[in-house]
Length: 224
Image (cartoon, rainbow, N blue to C red; front, side, top):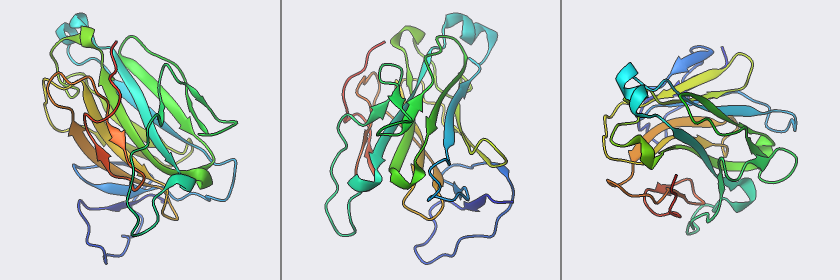
């Protein structure tokens, strides 16, 4: 019973709700926290992008999605009152798998060309600032929403705490979706359902800022 959840858009003075369970699914705009010992260097969490391709006809037309983890290290977080800046190049994905043995202490576990799962492990929680879990839909998929592919993010400590982050909007023309933001600046990592989409036909990935904000269509262009 370690997971605690917050309703969408909590007020700044609202206390953290009491724990409600060890496996939850977030509603739109909701947040939930995982209780971890941040000072333990062996502690890790894993972010999964799961998708089943949707219907049989949808799978037949293609459903190649990519997991991206955009990241800001704890050392790069903007101090209170300071202007935030974009984190250029802070992305772990199939072309930049990263490492758990050196910065950024995030490791992508490989590309999946068919419906299933892509995963990335985030280590050294004490050295993490923010991580934005995104999905990219390959151009070859054609028209189709991430929701129609059955896409969702799952964040887990690998033991008894799992947070599922579904998608709720049926956006048919976006190549990018930002699904979940993991905020490591709290005593316990806070996972938020953020669901924002790129402009129609935009290949530019999202950009994560040093204060945890992010902007769609502002990063480097991707093409697959």
